[in-house]
Amino acid sequence: MPESFIHKDLRINSYGSYLRRRFGCRVSKVNVDGGFTCPNRDGSRGTGGCIYCDNSSFSPKETVPVIPIEEQMAAGMAYHRQRLGSEKFIVYFQKFTNTYAPVSKLSDLYRRALDHPDVVGLSIGTRPDSVSDKAIDLLTELAKDRYICVELGLQSMDDAILNGINRGHTLEEYLATVQRLAGRGIDLCTHLIYGFPGETRAGFVKSARLLNSLPINAVKIHQLHAVRGTRLAQMYLDGSYRPIDLAEYLAGACDFLEELSPRISVQRLYGSAPLAIRVAPNWDLKNNQMWYAVVNELKRRGSWQGCRFGGEVKAANW
Image 1 (cartoon, helix red, strand yellow):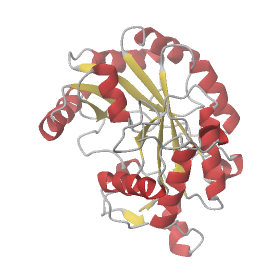
Image 2 (tube, helix red, strand yellow):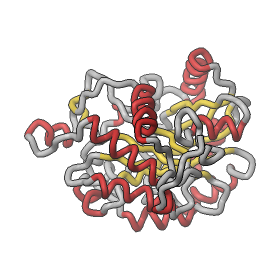
Image 3 (cartoon, one colour):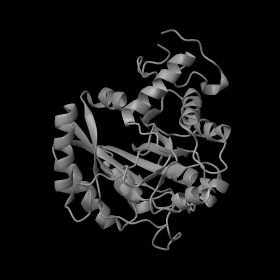
Image 4 (tube, helix red, strand yellow):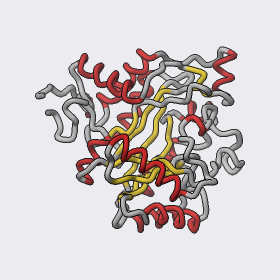
């Protein structure tokens, strides 16, 4: 096996395998909605949000801010216990920007989530421009005895693309925030999307090499997709945006993984939206189907995550 943390059957350092190694049991992430907003919606960085953003496309119906997080957690835990036999849980603050609030609110929500005896830690989705020094101090304190992962939405390392999608932050801000969070006992995950207008496969794959150079622990990637009510959906309808096809996404994802350091775990390879609001692309795949499509392509190539890490093609010793 090329690396001890590459799952032999998956050919990827999967996040699920990472959690099993770390905690010794099956651990699932449970989504909650803490009632946050976003600086790219309320005017502090911009208005209207990113051109693809509609949070209903990735938020389970149980996670709405009017429901106390304890009830949201209970529903999610029950689901994962029954479906997967999960024993422990990471509470995932996902919707909008989950460090974008006074530290008193952050402390209340985070500590309430950690109070549950079956919760081993938190995963906190946020933006590079919305992590204050006080928030970092709070996360550092919590990370002394619990698992804390900060998920930074970079989406693209190309500032022209970031500007074109109305992202509201720059690559430089992302890099600065990574350095501010590094060395504090906090895991760092980066979100990337493939398929932006004007993006090339080479440009997307280059981002793997960027992550390799940084203290990043995990990555999430998925295809760009348009959902109803977004500017991206309107661009699709007027012909100014054409999504990449499944074959191109698979090729790009596998090229990316081959370049990605084996030490970085992979949390996500696919994004899907409910059929009722999905506009394009319509691949009609479940998450596990995409995972195995990627795995099968890696097998076809005779490759795995990190086989081109460092610009050198490594030989297989499966």
